[in-house]
Length: 116
Image 1 (cartoon, one colour):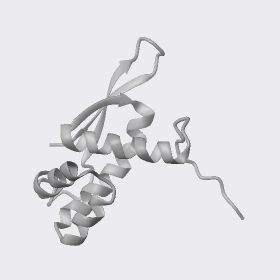
Image 2: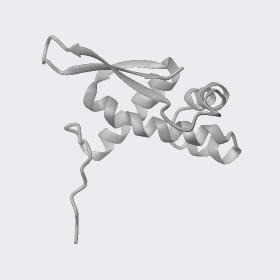
Image 3: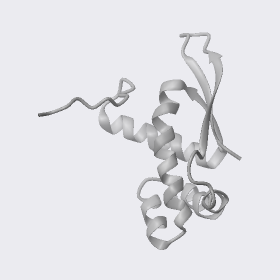
């Protein structure tokens, strides 16, 4: 019996949604904090958490797995800074901080950042 998948579609087709998630994840990795809507942040957060878990291993395989999703600069930052920084942490690498609503369309805005 087919079940419906309860994922956020963000008013985009699959390719656009995947591209959006990858771009936002790489921006978060490079800048360590991004300002976005709450729905997008909740979509990107689990993706980034999985990437950090992969980067913690520090192996060649993990480097290649990250390279299949992220640009070279982001992979380099993940393997040299973020992965070793969270080596002893078991999860919860990112947090969402609500900052109010956007004036133009009243969307809930948040900061998505790495926990220090």
